[in-house]
Image 1: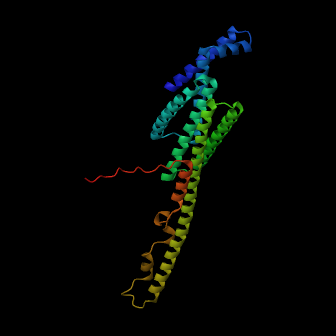
Image 2: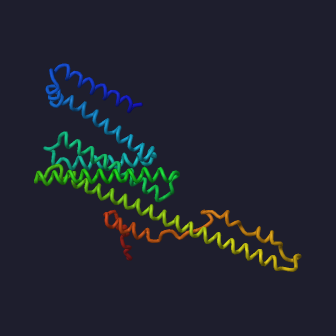
Image 3: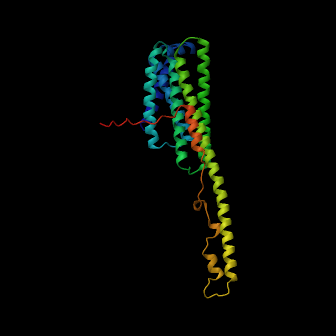
Length: 293
């Protein structure tokens, strides 16, 4: 309700500013100049643009990720707070260049980070438990990871070209480094997702193979039991063929939960190499030595 009131107020204010500018000015050019030179008008219009960006991002998030869990929202707030603080501290180096374009790049950086954090969290959830609707989940997640990687690469390419053209240190140097880190992080998340898909495929194949082996073992055991029971001559001390076959489970009733598979033993090695390459591997803390007196 509060967001709806905020959106309505922002829209009304922006519409009022634009209508007033066109009423007081004779043509479009003079009205545009007035809007660009008035600090109050710029603040109101920038607020509306940020609101539109937030609405688009919220729509994409609901489309590709669905509703976020409370723990995800809490983690996003914490990470976003630290990211905004770090960027604000870093922008003091280029405080002379703070302006409209800086705000655009700052919002793009924050959007890229938030989108990457959500994707990384969903990949971690996939590693812990299988999704309820695998097709929809994988379709959403794969497209969102591709979108995140494409966005980071495109902005990184633009930042690098701008730095090379200007040939002097400016704010784009900071954004180039930030988006380079984001690109590496998005690539790592996509690679980890590929590893999870490979593990799921290997486990599925192992499960199918183990099911076939187990069912074949039960068929052979039932046939041997029937043959042994039919060759017995003393029926008073031996079970009948029907009772002997009933002691063994039906091969068709064996499911995936009844078999054990070894899994993918090389997954840990691939994850280790991936973390080592992307710089996410942290050295374990070494306890201080105990001094003997």
